[in-house]
Image (cartoon, rainbow over all chains, first blue to last red; front, side, top):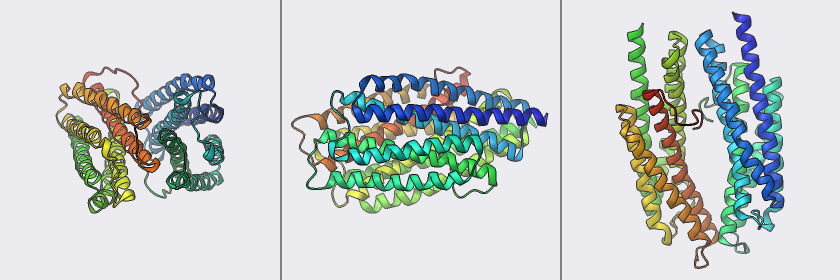
Amino acid sequence: MRKVFQAELQEVREELAEIAQLVAEALDKAVESFESADVELAQEVIAADARIDFKQTALDEKAIEILALQGPVASDLRTIVASLRMSASLERMGDLARHIAQLTRLRYPENAAPEALRRTFGKMAELDQSIIRDVAELLATHDLTLVAKIQGSNAELDELHASIFRAIAEPSWSASPSSSVDAALASRYFERFADHGVSVARKVSYLVTGEWDGDMTSS
Amino acid sequence: MRKVFQAELQEVREELAEIAQLVAEALDKAVESFESADVELAQEVIAADARIDFKQTALDEKAIEILALQGPVASDLRTIVASLRMSASLERMGDLARHIAQLTRLRYPENAAPEALRRTFGKMAELDQSIIRDVAELLATHDLTLVAKIQGSNAELDELHASIFRAIAEPSWSASPSSSVDAALASRYFERFADHGVSVARKVSYLVTGEWDGDMTSS
Protein backbone atom coordinates (compact mmCIF):
# COMPACT_ATOMS: atom_id res chain seq x y z
CA MET A 1 0.00 0.00 0.00
CA ARG A 2 2.69 2.43 1.07
CA LYS A 3 4.67 1.65 -2.08
CA VAL A 4 1.66 2.26 -4.30
CA PHE A 5 1.09 5.53 -2.51
CA GLN A 6 4.68 6.67 -2.99
CA ALA A 7 4.45 5.88 -6.69
CA GLU A 8 1.22 7.86 -6.93
CA LEU A 9 2.77 10.78 -5.11
CA GLN A 10 5.68 10.69 -7.52
CA GLU A 11 3.21 10.79 -10.41
CA VAL A 12 1.50 13.85 -8.95
CA ARG A 13 4.89 15.51 -8.61
CA GLU A 14 5.77 14.77 -12.22
CA GLU A 15 2.40 16.03 -13.39
CA LEU A 16 2.92 19.30 -11.52
CA ALA A 17 6.35 19.74 -13.11
CA GLU A 18 4.79 19.02 -16.50
CA ILE A 19 2.08 21.66 -16.01
CA ALA A 20 4.81 24.13 -14.97
CA GLN A 21 6.59 23.29 -18.21
CA LEU A 22 3.44 24.07 -20.22
CA VAL A 23 3.06 27.36 -18.34
CA ALA A 24 6.69 28.19 -19.18
CA GLU A 25 5.99 27.63 -22.86
CA ALA A 26 2.80 29.72 -22.68
CA LEU A 27 4.70 32.54 -21.00
CA ASP A 28 7.49 32.46 -23.61
CA LYS A 29 4.97 32.81 -26.41
CA ALA A 30 2.91 35.42 -24.55
CA VAL A 31 6.05 37.51 -23.99
CA GLU A 32 7.12 37.21 -27.60
CA SER A 33 3.65 38.19 -28.84
CA PHE A 34 3.55 41.09 -26.37
CA GLU A 35 6.96 42.40 -27.39
CA SER A 36 6.40 42.11 -31.14
CA ALA A 37 2.62 42.70 -31.33
CA ASP A 38 2.29 39.26 -32.92
CA VAL A 39 -1.44 38.63 -32.84
CA GLU A 40 -1.25 35.10 -34.24
CA LEU A 41 1.12 33.99 -31.53
CA ALA A 42 -1.12 35.69 -28.96
CA GLN A 43 -4.04 33.73 -30.36
CA GLU A 44 -2.05 30.52 -29.96
CA VAL A 45 -1.40 31.23 -26.27
CA ILE A 46 -5.07 32.00 -25.67
CA ALA A 47 -6.16 28.75 -27.35
CA ALA A 48 -3.52 26.63 -25.60
CA ASP A 49 -4.59 27.73 -22.12
CA ALA A 50 -7.44 25.21 -22.23
CA ARG A 51 -4.85 22.43 -22.24
CA ILE A 52 -3.30 23.72 -19.01
CA ASP A 53 -6.75 23.96 -17.44
CA PHE A 54 -7.52 20.41 -18.57
CA LYS A 55 -4.29 19.03 -17.12
CA GLN A 56 -4.96 20.81 -13.86
CA THR A 57 -8.45 19.32 -13.63
CA ALA A 58 -7.05 15.86 -14.35
CA LEU A 59 -4.35 16.28 -11.70
CA ASP A 60 -6.88 17.45 -9.13
CA GLU A 61 -9.10 14.47 -9.90
CA LYS A 62 -6.11 12.21 -9.36
CA ALA A 63 -5.30 13.90 -6.04
CA ILE A 64 -8.90 13.50 -4.87
CA GLU A 65 -8.82 9.84 -5.91
CA ILE A 66 -5.65 9.32 -3.87
CA LEU A 67 -7.35 10.94 -0.88
CA ALA A 68 -10.35 8.62 -1.30
CA LEU A 69 -8.47 5.37 -1.89
CA GLN A 70 -5.42 5.80 0.32
CA GLY A 71 -6.80 7.97 3.12
CA PRO A 72 -3.35 9.46 3.74
CA VAL A 73 -2.59 11.15 7.04
CA ALA A 74 0.09 13.46 8.46
CA SER A 75 2.72 14.60 5.98
CA ASP A 76 1.33 12.49 3.12
CA LEU A 77 -2.03 14.19 3.51
CA ARG A 78 -0.38 17.61 3.55
CA THR A 79 1.48 16.74 0.38
CA ILE A 80 -1.76 16.01 -1.43
CA VAL A 81 -3.48 19.13 -0.13
CA ALA A 82 -0.44 21.22 -1.08
CA SER A 83 -0.50 19.66 -4.55
CA LEU A 84 -4.09 20.79 -5.02
CA ARG A 85 -3.01 24.30 -4.10
CA MET A 86 0.11 24.25 -6.26
CA SER A 87 -1.90 23.10 -9.26
CA ALA A 88 -4.31 26.01 -8.68
CA SER A 89 -1.35 28.43 -8.62
CA LEU A 90 0.10 26.98 -11.82
CA GLU A 91 -3.27 27.17 -13.54
CA ARG A 92 -3.52 30.81 -12.47
CA MET A 93 -0.03 31.47 -13.88
CA GLY A 94 -1.28 30.05 -17.18
CA ASP A 95 -4.23 32.46 -16.98
CA LEU A 96 -1.85 35.37 -16.48
CA ALA A 97 0.19 34.38 -19.54
CA ARG A 98 -3.13 34.29 -21.39
CA HIS A 99 -4.02 37.76 -20.06
CA ILE A 100 -0.76 39.13 -21.49
CA ALA A 101 -1.62 37.55 -24.84
CA GLN A 102 -5.16 38.99 -24.64
CA LEU A 103 -3.75 42.47 -24.04
CA THR A 104 -1.58 41.99 -27.12
CA ARG A 105 -4.58 40.94 -29.18
CA LEU A 106 -6.72 43.82 -27.89
CA ARG A 107 -4.18 46.46 -28.95
CA TYR A 108 -3.14 44.88 -32.24
CA PRO A 109 -1.87 46.27 -34.61
CA GLU A 110 -0.47 48.66 -32.01
CA ASN A 111 2.05 47.44 -29.48
CA ALA A 112 0.54 47.05 -25.99
CA ALA A 113 3.84 47.99 -24.35
CA PRO A 114 4.54 51.74 -24.55
CA GLU A 115 7.91 52.45 -26.15
CA ALA A 116 9.35 54.08 -23.02
CA LEU A 117 8.74 50.97 -20.91
CA ARG A 118 9.84 48.20 -23.26
CA ARG A 119 13.18 47.68 -21.57
CA THR A 120 11.51 47.43 -18.18
CA PHE A 121 8.93 44.97 -19.50
CA GLY A 122 11.75 43.01 -21.11
CA LYS A 123 13.40 42.61 -17.72
CA MET A 124 10.13 41.71 -16.02
CA ALA A 125 9.47 39.06 -18.66
CA GLU A 126 12.93 37.59 -18.20
CA LEU A 127 12.45 37.37 -14.44
CA ASP A 128 9.11 35.61 -14.86
CA GLN A 129 10.63 33.25 -17.39
CA SER A 130 13.40 32.39 -14.96
CA ILE A 131 10.87 31.97 -12.13
CA ILE A 132 8.64 29.50 -13.96
CA ARG A 133 11.67 27.48 -15.12
CA ASP A 134 12.99 27.41 -11.56
CA VAL A 135 9.54 26.37 -10.32
CA ALA A 136 9.39 23.52 -12.85
CA GLU A 137 12.85 22.35 -11.81
CA LEU A 138 12.03 22.72 -8.12
CA LEU A 139 8.92 20.60 -8.56
CA ALA A 140 10.89 17.93 -10.40
CA THR A 141 14.01 17.87 -8.21
CA HIS A 142 13.02 19.39 -4.83
CA ASP A 143 16.33 21.28 -4.97
CA LEU A 144 15.62 23.88 -2.31
CA THR A 145 18.43 26.23 -3.35
CA LEU A 146 15.96 27.29 -6.06
CA VAL A 147 13.52 28.70 -3.50
CA ALA A 148 15.73 31.64 -2.53
CA LYS A 149 16.48 32.26 -6.19
CA ILE A 150 12.76 32.42 -6.99
CA GLN A 151 12.16 34.78 -4.08
CA GLY A 152 15.05 36.98 -5.23
CA SER A 153 13.63 37.20 -8.76
CA ASN A 154 10.26 38.10 -7.29
CA ALA A 155 11.77 40.93 -5.23
CA GLU A 156 13.43 42.34 -8.36
CA LEU A 157 10.14 42.07 -10.18
CA ASP A 158 8.27 43.94 -7.44
CA GLU A 159 10.75 46.78 -7.78
CA LEU A 160 10.29 46.94 -11.57
CA HIS A 161 6.51 46.85 -11.10
CA ALA A 162 6.73 49.87 -8.77
CA SER A 163 9.01 51.66 -11.26
CA ILE A 164 6.35 51.32 -13.96
CA PHE A 165 3.79 53.08 -11.79
CA ARG A 166 6.34 55.80 -10.98
CA ALA A 167 7.08 56.27 -14.69
CA ILE A 168 3.38 56.68 -15.48
CA ALA A 169 3.08 59.33 -12.74
CA GLU A 170 6.03 61.40 -14.12
CA PRO A 171 5.14 64.79 -15.64
CA SER A 172 7.19 63.76 -18.69
CA TRP A 173 4.99 60.68 -19.30
CA SER A 174 3.33 61.18 -22.67
CA ALA A 175 1.50 57.97 -23.57
CA SER A 176 -2.29 57.98 -24.00
CA PRO A 177 -4.58 57.01 -21.11
CA SER A 178 -5.39 53.68 -22.76
CA SER A 179 -1.75 52.95 -23.31
CA SER A 180 -1.01 53.84 -19.69
CA VAL A 181 -3.72 51.45 -18.57
CA ASP A 182 -2.30 48.68 -20.76
CA ALA A 183 1.11 49.20 -19.22
CA ALA A 184 -0.27 49.10 -15.69
CA LEU A 185 -2.26 45.95 -16.34
CA ALA A 186 0.61 44.18 -18.09
CA SER A 187 2.88 45.10 -15.20
CA ARG A 188 0.37 43.71 -12.75
CA TYR A 189 0.08 40.46 -14.72
CA PHE A 190 3.86 40.00 -14.70
CA GLU A 191 3.98 40.77 -10.99
CA ARG A 192 1.13 38.42 -10.06
CA PHE A 193 2.73 35.66 -12.12
CA ALA A 194 5.81 35.90 -9.92
CA ASP A 195 3.72 35.95 -6.72
CA HIS A 196 2.15 32.64 -7.67
CA GLY A 197 5.60 31.24 -8.45
CA VAL A 198 6.76 32.18 -4.96
CA SER A 199 3.64 30.60 -3.51
CA VAL A 200 4.46 27.26 -5.21
CA ALA A 201 8.11 27.49 -4.15
CA ARG A 202 7.17 28.03 -0.52
CA LYS A 203 4.84 25.05 -0.55
CA VAL A 204 7.56 22.77 -1.92
CA SER A 205 9.94 24.11 0.70
CA TYR A 206 7.38 23.39 3.40
CA LEU A 207 6.81 19.86 2.18
CA VAL A 208 10.51 19.08 2.11
CA THR A 209 11.54 20.72 5.39
CA GLY A 210 8.27 20.56 7.36
CA GLU A 211 8.83 24.20 8.26
CA TRP A 212 6.58 26.95 7.11
CA ASP A 213 7.84 30.51 6.78
CA GLY A 214 4.44 32.12 6.64
CA ASP A 215 0.92 31.70 5.44
CA MET A 216 0.32 28.21 4.09
CA THR A 217 -2.99 29.08 2.59
CA SER A 218 -2.14 31.92 0.27
CA SER A 219 -1.95 31.14 -3.37
CA MET B 1 -18.82 8.45 13.36
CA ARG B 2 -21.12 9.57 10.61
CA LYS B 3 -22.92 11.89 13.02
CA VAL B 4 -19.67 13.46 14.19
CA PHE B 5 -18.67 13.97 10.60
CA GLN B 6 -21.94 15.69 9.72
CA ALA B 7 -21.55 18.00 12.68
CA GLU B 8 -18.01 18.84 11.59
CA LEU B 9 -19.17 19.50 8.06
CA GLN B 10 -21.85 21.81 9.40
CA GLU B 11 -19.16 23.67 11.36
CA VAL B 12 -17.06 24.11 8.22
CA ARG B 13 -20.11 25.46 6.44
CA GLU B 14 -20.81 27.96 9.22
CA GLU B 15 -17.17 29.03 9.28
CA LEU B 16 -17.28 29.67 5.53
CA ALA B 17 -20.42 31.78 5.92
CA GLU B 18 -18.73 33.67 8.74
CA ILE B 19 -15.66 34.44 6.62
CA ALA B 20 -17.98 35.63 3.84
CA GLN B 21 -19.61 37.94 6.39
CA LEU B 22 -16.20 39.40 7.32
CA VAL B 23 -15.42 39.89 3.63
CA ALA B 24 -18.77 41.69 3.21
CA GLU B 25 -17.85 44.07 6.04
CA ALA B 26 -14.38 44.64 4.59
CA LEU B 27 -15.88 45.41 1.18
CA ASP B 28 -18.41 47.87 2.66
CA LYS B 29 -15.64 49.79 4.37
CA ALA B 30 -13.31 49.59 1.36
CA VAL B 31 -16.06 50.99 -0.87
CA GLU B 32 -16.86 53.79 1.57
CA SER B 33 -13.18 54.72 1.89
CA PHE B 34 -12.77 54.58 -1.90
CA GLU B 35 -15.80 56.78 -2.54
CA SER B 36 -15.00 59.39 0.09
CA ALA B 37 -11.16 59.21 0.08
CA ASP B 38 -11.30 58.28 3.77
CA VAL B 39 -7.76 57.17 4.52
CA GLU B 40 -8.47 56.13 8.10
CA LEU B 41 -11.21 53.77 7.05
CA ALA B 42 -8.94 52.43 4.30
CA GLN B 43 -6.30 51.79 6.94
CA GLU B 44 -8.85 49.88 8.99
CA VAL B 45 -9.68 47.58 6.05
CA ILE B 46 -6.00 46.94 5.40
CA ALA B 47 -5.35 46.05 9.04
CA ALA B 48 -8.48 43.87 9.34
CA ASP B 49 -7.52 41.68 6.38
CA ALA B 50 -5.16 39.72 8.63
CA ARG B 51 -8.21 38.48 10.56
CA ILE B 52 -9.76 37.06 7.39
CA ASP B 53 -6.46 35.38 6.52
CA PHE B 54 -6.24 33.94 10.02
CA LYS B 55 -9.76 32.56 9.89
CA GLN B 56 -9.07 31.01 6.52
CA THR B 57 -5.94 29.30 7.81
CA ALA B 58 -7.86 27.99 10.82
CA LEU B 59 -10.66 26.68 8.60
CA ASP B 60 -8.19 24.97 6.28
CA GLU B 61 -6.48 23.34 9.25
CA LYS B 62 -9.85 22.07 10.40
CA ALA B 63 -10.62 20.69 6.93
CA ILE B 64 -7.27 18.90 6.81
CA GLU B 65 -7.91 17.48 10.28
CA ILE B 66 -11.28 16.15 9.11
CA LEU B 67 -9.57 14.52 6.13
CA ALA B 68 -7.02 12.90 8.41
CA LEU B 69 -9.37 11.71 11.14
CA GLN B 70 -12.48 10.81 9.16
CA GLY B 71 -10.99 9.73 5.83
CA PRO B 72 -14.14 10.79 4.00
CA VAL B 73 -14.88 9.40 0.54
CA ALA B 74 -17.24 10.20 -2.34
CA SER B 75 -19.40 13.29 -1.88
CA ASP B 76 -18.15 13.94 1.65
CA LEU B 77 -14.59 14.09 0.39
CA ARG B 78 -15.60 16.45 -2.40
CA THR B 79 -17.33 18.69 0.10
CA ILE B 80 -14.12 19.05 2.09
CA VAL B 81 -11.99 19.66 -0.99
CA ALA B 82 -14.51 22.22 -2.26
CA SER B 83 -14.44 23.91 1.15
CA LEU B 84 -10.68 24.34 0.87
CA ARG B 85 -11.20 25.99 -2.49
CA MET B 86 -14.07 28.16 -1.37
CA SER B 87 -12.06 29.41 1.59
CA ALA B 88 -9.23 30.32 -0.81
CA SER B 89 -11.71 32.28 -2.97
CA LEU B 90 -13.13 34.11 0.04
CA GLU B 91 -9.65 34.96 1.28
CA ARG B 92 -8.85 36.32 -2.17
CA MET B 93 -12.03 38.43 -2.09
CA GLY B 94 -10.77 39.87 1.19
CA ASP B 95 -7.48 40.68 -0.53
CA LEU B 96 -9.34 42.50 -3.30
CA ALA B 97 -11.27 44.61 -0.77
CA ARG B 98 -7.86 45.39 0.75
CA HIS B 99 -6.48 46.33 -2.68
CA ILE B 100 -9.32 48.85 -3.11
CA ALA B 101 -8.46 50.31 0.29
CA GLN B 102 -4.76 50.40 -0.64
CA LEU B 103 -5.58 52.32 -3.81
CA THR B 104 -7.52 54.81 -1.67
CA ARG B 105 -4.58 55.22 0.69
CA LEU B 106 -2.10 55.59 -2.15
CA ARG B 107 -4.03 58.48 -3.75
CA TYR B 108 -5.02 60.22 -0.53
CA PRO B 109 -5.82 63.15 -0.22
CA GLU B 110 -6.99 62.84 -3.82
CA ASN B 111 -9.89 60.60 -4.69
CA ALA B 112 -8.79 57.40 -6.46
CA ALA B 113 -12.01 57.30 -8.51
CA PRO B 114 -12.01 59.87 -11.34
CA GLU B 115 -15.07 62.14 -11.14
CA ALA B 116 -16.43 60.99 -14.50
CA LEU B 117 -16.57 57.34 -13.40
CA ARG B 118 -17.93 57.66 -9.88
CA ARG B 119 -21.45 56.65 -10.82
CA THR B 120 -20.15 53.57 -12.62
CA PHE B 121 -17.95 52.62 -9.68
CA GLY B 122 -20.93 53.15 -7.38
CA LYS B 123 -22.90 50.60 -9.38
CA MET B 124 -19.98 48.16 -9.48
CA ALA B 125 -19.58 48.44 -5.71
CA GLU B 126 -23.30 47.82 -5.16
CA LEU B 127 -23.18 44.70 -7.33
CA ASP B 128 -20.17 43.34 -5.43
CA GLN B 129 -21.88 44.11 -2.13
CA SER B 130 -24.94 42.22 -3.26
CA ILE B 131 -22.77 39.33 -4.51
CA ILE B 132 -20.88 38.82 -1.26
CA ARG B 133 -24.12 39.01 0.78
CA ASP B 134 -25.70 36.47 -1.53
CA VAL B 135 -22.61 34.26 -1.23
CA ALA B 136 -22.75 34.43 2.58
CA GLU B 137 -26.44 33.53 2.53
CA LEU B 138 -25.88 30.77 -0.02
CA LEU B 139 -23.17 29.25 2.17
CA ALA B 140 -25.41 29.38 5.21
CA THR B 141 -28.68 28.21 3.61
CA HIS B 142 -27.71 26.38 0.38
CA ASP B 143 -30.61 28.22 -1.27
CA LEU B 144 -29.68 27.65 -4.91
CA THR B 145 -31.93 30.38 -6.28
CA LEU B 146 -29.10 32.69 -5.18
CA VAL B 147 -26.67 31.14 -7.68
CA ALA B 148 -28.40 32.58 -10.75
CA LYS B 149 -28.73 35.93 -8.96
CA ILE B 150 -24.98 35.98 -8.27
CA GLN B 151 -24.22 35.06 -11.88
CA GLY B 152 -26.57 37.81 -13.08
CA SER B 153 -24.85 40.42 -10.91
CA ASN B 154 -21.50 39.24 -12.23
CA ALA B 155 -22.66 39.65 -15.85
CA GLU B 156 -23.77 43.22 -15.10
CA LEU B 157 -20.43 43.88 -13.46
CA ASP B 158 -18.49 42.59 -16.47
CA GLU B 159 -20.41 45.04 -18.65
CA LEU B 160 -19.60 47.97 -16.33
CA HIS B 161 -15.94 46.87 -16.24
CA ALA B 162 -15.82 46.96 -20.05
CA SER B 163 -17.53 50.38 -20.06
CA ILE B 164 -14.77 51.80 -17.86
CA PHE B 165 -12.12 50.74 -20.38
CA ARG B 166 -14.21 52.23 -23.19
CA ALA B 167 -14.54 55.51 -21.28
CA ILE B 168 -10.76 55.71 -20.79
CA ALA B 169 -10.24 55.17 -24.53
CA GLU B 170 -12.64 58.03 -25.50
CA PRO B 171 -11.01 61.12 -27.07
CA SER B 172 -12.96 63.19 -24.52
CA TRP B 173 -11.30 61.38 -21.58
CA SER B 174 -9.31 64.01 -19.68
CA ALA B 175 -8.01 62.40 -16.49
CA SER B 176 -4.26 62.07 -15.90
CA PRO B 177 -2.42 58.83 -16.79
CA SER B 178 -2.08 57.91 -13.11
CA SER B 179 -5.74 58.55 -12.51
CA SER B 180 -6.61 56.44 -15.57
CA VAL B 181 -4.47 53.63 -14.20
CA ASP B 182 -6.18 53.88 -10.79
CA ALA B 183 -9.56 53.62 -12.46
CA ALA B 184 -8.52 50.59 -14.51
CA LEU B 185 -7.06 48.80 -11.48
CA ALA B 186 -10.06 49.57 -9.27
CA SER B 187 -12.35 48.32 -12.00
CA ARG B 188 -10.34 45.13 -12.25
CA TYR B 189 -10.47 44.59 -8.49
CA PHE B 190 -14.26 44.99 -8.47
CA GLU B 191 -14.57 42.64 -11.42
CA ARG B 192 -12.26 39.95 -9.95
CA PHE B 193 -14.14 40.13 -6.65
CA ALA B 194 -17.32 39.14 -8.51
CA ASP B 195 -15.51 36.32 -10.38
CA HIS B 196 -14.48 34.73 -7.10
CA GLY B 197 -18.04 35.10 -5.82
CA VAL B 198 -19.30 33.20 -8.86
CA SER B 199 -16.66 30.56 -8.29
CA VAL B 200 -17.89 29.97 -4.72
CA ALA B 201 -21.52 29.94 -5.87
CA ARG B 202 -20.80 27.31 -8.52
CA LYS B 203 -19.06 25.09 -6.00
CA VAL B 204 -22.00 25.23 -3.60
CA SER B 205 -24.31 24.46 -6.51
CA TYR B 206 -22.15 21.48 -7.44
CA LEU B 207 -22.12 20.16 -3.89
CA VAL B 208 -25.89 20.39 -3.58
CA THR B 209 -26.87 19.05 -7.00
CA GLY B 210 -23.86 16.88 -7.82
CA GLU B 211 -23.84 18.48 -11.25
CA TRP B 212 -21.04 20.65 -12.46
CA ASP B 213 -21.63 23.31 -15.10
CA GLY B 214 -17.99 23.80 -15.97
CA ASP B 215 -14.49 23.84 -14.61
CA MET B 216 -14.41 22.61 -11.01
CA THR B 217 -10.90 23.75 -10.43
CA SER B 218 -11.05 27.42 -11.28
CA SER B 219 -11.09 29.79 -8.39
